[in-house]
Every structure is written in structure tokens, then in C-alpha cells.
Image (cartoon, rainbow, N blue to C red; front, side, top):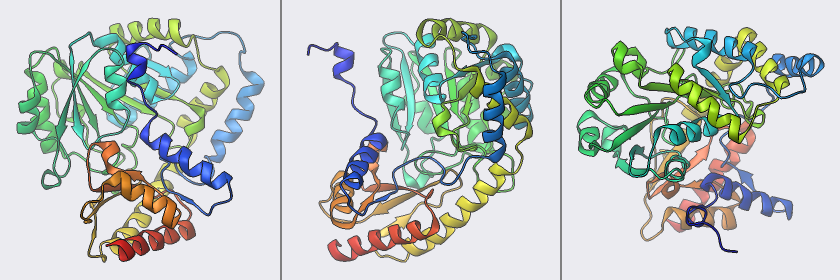
Length: 391
């Protein structure tokens, strides 16, 4: 078939591809531990489940608003205002089918051909495709482990040009778990202030899942002035902190003019989201208080156990994550790419992880910590066995 040039550049998300390959083998009866998926294990919050059932009974089943159900946007605005210690209005909130679509909508509405998007690497696998699919150019800013896999002020300065339109910040970062400090964010804020065309898309999907008692990770909005804050757009969702990956609920808090333009875009692309999931979301955000805290405590405990065990191996080093729910593992093997290692792990050891090159960083692996403890322990056994055998 003769596809468009843009379609020819598309490929499946690397995490989805790795998951699909593992699931195919599992369907054939193979013993595979699936550690590729970026979603919490276990059940969803009980309150969310009950709210969904009640929402089905009371929902409007006709077309809804392309901006999102008013009651849900009111709940999100209140929730965001409390989380960020800012004031967000209901007019700023746009609900989308997942934060990935929120990002795509923003790229579509802000980027023209030739505009540049700065992506600090290692980075989530979809940022580049989302940006280039609307015609933007991508500038990858590789951030070494000596700088904590975070973009510094001087490194950002090297990548800023007159064409710079968007900077993406993800804290905690997928895949590394790196969290930006307020000092690092201040340096970034000063540069953003000097570039009035530049917007910052803050992918905050993990920002409650941090390994501390704080309610969220430090944020650019904490340190920038009021004018610069108008170009800082937090993007959030229900997938990670509330384990509602399958509900496909994301949102942004954008300047009202941009929110209105995104709403126009969504009216032409997705029309509206089902009311009943938005009703359940609103109830969950307003009433669920324990789930996030319990989830991050469970993930942190798993991380500390697995980090200690893998760091005991001569060829493995785990980055000291500060949040999210992944192990970011550097390995020392000569002449073995991360794609080769992940295929070996799957075929020879029955362990599915994601190659570091998918995140822009060779000689690394990403393994999800969202596994039951017995499976997680066995996953570590299989990884250590592989590096004992082939190292």
C-alpha cells in the first residue's frame, strides 16, 4: 500500500512492541515474566470502581463537550490547584483520552514545520514521534549519568535556537526515575524566560510517585515568574498514580486561549469522551486519599530491594531512582547492544524488558517494578543468571 511520507516514518511504540512480542510467546505457553509494561500491578482504587458503576447509572450517553465534562473539569481544576499550589480555572482544563493525546494536541496547536522541540534524553519513547508527526524538528539533548540524566542550564543553552518552540520536562523521568531539584529548575526557568516563543510541556504523569514524603516532585511552576508560568503547561492523568491505564484519561492545564484551540482540535478529532468515566474520575480525585501514598511506598520498597541486589553484580549498576516505577540498569557487556540483550533475555531466560536504545541510551535496560513480589524476585534471578552466563 502507498502510505503517506509521515505514515512511512511511523513505527510501533518500543514498549508496546516489546510487550506484544512477550505476550505472543506467553500465548504459546512459554514461561515469560512481563516487565515491560508501565502500569501499576494490582487492582484499581475501590472507590474508582464504585464511582464508575454509579456513573453508568447517571451518565448522559449523548455527545459531550470536546473539552471534557464540566463537573470533571471542575474536580480536576480543584485537584490541580491543591497539588501545584497554583490557581487553575476550569477554562484552562482540557480532558483527553490519555496524556499522550494531550501532548499530541499541544504539538498540533503550537508547532509549525521547522519549529524545534528539545527533548532531554533518556526520554519516554513517544515524544519524538508525537513531535515529528506534526512537522516539528527534534533536538535530542543527551544528558549523561554524571549529570543525573537531567538537563542542566548550560546543556539546555546549547540546544536553544531562534526556532525553539517546545521543551519537554518529565520529572520523575521515564525511564530513569530522575527528579529535578528546585535549583536545577531555576536555571531552566531563567532560560525559558529569555525565549518568549518557548513553551514547556511538563509531563507530570509520575510526579506524585516520588520516593519522599512530599506530595509531588519539585516543579517549574514553583520557581518561575508569573509571565513565564503562562508558557509552562502541566500535563497529567489517571494512568499511573491511580492505576487507571485502561480508562484513557489525561488532561492539561493550559492558558485559556490555548485550551480553547485544543478544544477545537479535539472537536474535530475525537468529538468527546464518555461521560461515565469522567464522572468516576471526578469522584476519585475528590475522595481517594490513600491509594497514591500506598502505591509509592510499595514501589519504593521494591526499588530499594532490587537496587541492592543488582548492584551486587559486577556487570550491573542501577541508577538511584527518585521516583516513577522502573529500574534503569546499566550493563557492562562487550559487543552486545541493548536490543540484542533484551532479545537474549526474552528467548534464553524468559524475561521481557525494554532496550535502553528505545529511550535514547545504549547499554541500558528498563525493567518495570510493577510486578508481584514473587515475580519480581524471579525476574531478578533470571537477569542475574543471564549476566552470569554471558558476562
